[in-house]
Length: 195
Image (cartoon, rainbow, N blue to C red):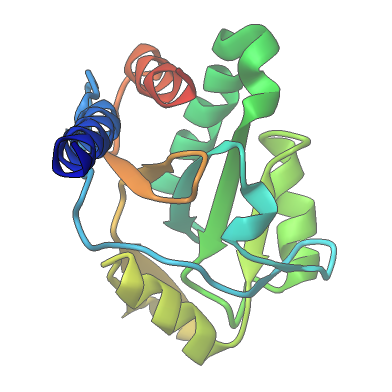
């Protein structure tokens, strides 16, 4: 009888774990489903107000994570405007989304610069910066590349990865959204993670 009870308990546990895993894997997204891919991880960077931030600060929210820089003429402001539109589309669920902008140009993008730039797109948006090594480490864990391109007069632009990531409420990377994903598709995918 004990053997039968233990076997029944084992089968039940396996069933529960399988159901939870299947639930985790079932996403109907417009972007690329990255569930189970070894990418991302926690970090400790400084926000535009001078506070140290990591993924644990956003636990319980879906995070839209985007890497860029404030001098960017097109990709960065366009993407941030799209996420601004997404927050409007989400309506009463907007407070369950945290948009996080991580600079790939920490030498110019100080917290003071981010404090002027990021709120323009959304009052709740967070901009993060840090030391060159700290930013490079986060970029590496999220497989983001960036390279300076010299301009006349000693200035420079930065060529960088242009997509964004959606992280679930536990801080796991779940979806990659390529640059130019329509607002309706971004909103759909975020709603999938809010289920």
